[in-house]
Image (cartoon, rainbow, N blue to C red; front, side, top):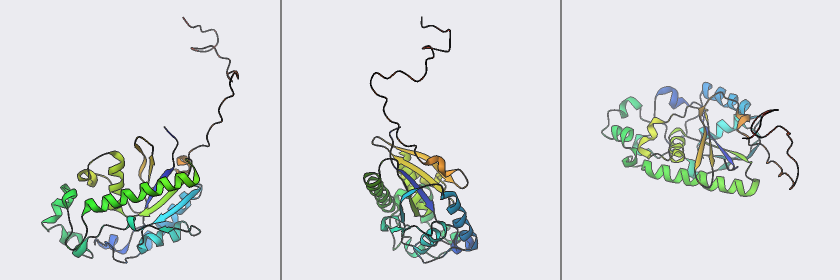
Length: 238
């Protein structure tokens, strides 16, 4: 695999809306007690990871998550990572919204879904993917291909970015899960993205840091191993 920067997508911790079964959208809902604990825990997991840049959705739940997880990070606000604009659906209970005619469209054909007074899901996906790809190119150019950077954003936004990385249609993005305070890792190589982690809520994140590049062996230098080609001692090439 070509060595490239690594993007860590962090979903914000659980909010009061998540706990109550409501659709927060762009409303200023905040983390609840569980969400604050999740943010602190993911911060512990991120300690061994040197982050070249930290980017966040402008919404308060993402900024609160980073304040708890990475209190010393100077996060840049990226409007392209804001939650989908759900329009008049914002603040409504999900049980009520599930009875709306648009609900099955959102679940089965989201590329055609346009929220009343809000945003099209396809537009959300396009601007989110454009935002992370632009930032990834910038981080790589400024910090090198071994850099790791983090973007804190929202569930549907992460799912849309993952669908793009996997090369699947947006209509399949509801099959992807991004839990609160989970980490998803993507590397954008010149030919294709690679999904390194998905919805990781407890794995070793230090393993995602690329190793330093190996120095090239000098011309004419003998191989370190003197084992016979094709096997161990006593073997022969036939």
